[in-house]
Length: 427
Image 1 (tube, rainbow, N blue to C red):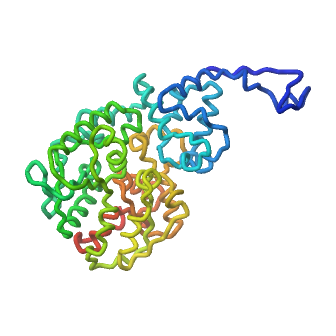
Image 2: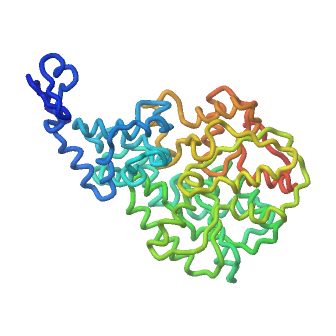
Image 3: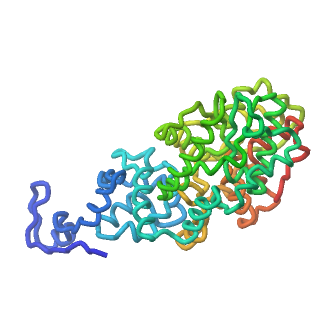
């Protein structure tokens, strides 16, 4: 670690005022010109990380950073530590950011951690300095097309339990209106598959002309990109764009907000540009066609996913669906919409729980669950595939098993439409 050089002066001039003696030593123990800024210069010379140098230490980011509420971290602190000569590439701070975008929302200097962290992480990955569990997720994604490490041949096996036809494009051999990009956790994780089955039944009930890529689909790769593996992201994007380009469809509907972000902002840069909607946006536009037959007499609160909300400005579509559920009462938590907490899964955080545990007093998912319980919710509704397993684990670890259920909005809608038999209210 390079250290800033301390100096002592008999006389100093600050803003035209001469300070001397003990006054000077108390208030001007260092001179900015004497700091060794080589480490900061090294970081800000990385393409994408330039704005770290814009920070002027106002602290607004610290006040809204969810990670700082459970640890000792914020963009302001990163700037200060780097300014003092600490290497960000070698620091645990590099991997704690969940890229939730809350800091950028309030930063008057537009210090953009959404660009800074992936850029610096990429350098760390190239130098072999990424945490082992993150490297495992990268390796699984490169080898199997998903970070979980499941066989790509099993990607569409969930469709056998759907109870309704789920057309696979390579077998259908006909144009469709909607190409449903399912993603990894909805295809492989047990709770993700339950939400996929619910959504498939909703599509069937609405007579949606849709199809999926099945085994031709690989991870959209946006979380890997934000975690520093741009090369892997580009490989995945090139594959998915090639597969999608084989077929004729009018729009893409995605389950995952991270995939939504990729298709909306990143894939077009590589030639893959199609109309895209998150499934809650698509269903909210067909609200009048949703035939509800069951009440859900529960207090429901909603967790805004960072990549649907703050990143892409969609707050209303999920709420329109929840407000339409007969018998349900929507209760907003104190941190909602723009100020919503993060679940901790973004920016590679989904694969860094063991690493971040050493730098936090509690998981972000646990903090969020406690807030949901505080507001008297029976159900914590989510609409990101990362969130069901994260929050269900947090329900157990916080001692709230049996008090709070975690449900994907697709499951709630399907239940109220009579398309699935029951809501599992405790896991």
